[in-house]
Image (cartoon, rainbow, N blue to C red):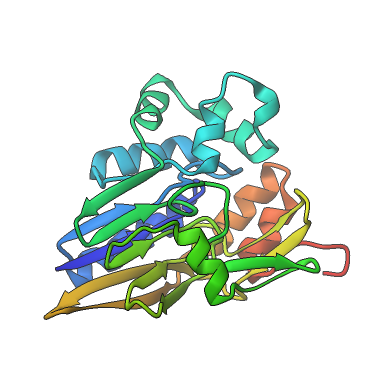
Length: 249
């Protein structure tokens, strides 16, 4: 069994198309999508239509939840752009997505952690930066979920870990946004240092699950130029450099 994991597309259709082409080339049994699909200053409607046509099982991330909120105050500027671009069919598709899913008895899918779409699973914010969470922190956030594989997104940081109980814990990274500045307290940056789109393949061979983290080049300059035209220099820099925008950049 080979399963491709994609996450945090954020309306980046060019990155998604490159990842989908690589998945098709490698051959997998299934593709699952861990959420935060459309929010951003790029191509949310076209990205939704691509995902709808592919029919991949998909989760709702925190930004997908914000897009469905009745109160505009709950949306970020990136959410506002996507919200204005979507039509009835795209909103209807978003409304069908759940925040977690048990893909099989052995594979559990979530956006953030098993209990929250906002919580970082494998990272901890400390002194304005992220660090690898301690084993105890990860165990607490696991909240007793016992699947052999737990896959999550949200932080955009690709990681594959194995805990003391032998569970494989995987974040495939972000298809569409390699860096960001989160200005919600505590303020911090997430940076992967690459312009590539990221995804993962997990595979069960015998009694063990393994993970492969993949980094796929694509026409990131076209998406950076689109972000700039839509007034988001922070997204432009992230897409061009894999680094977050700051006053020192």
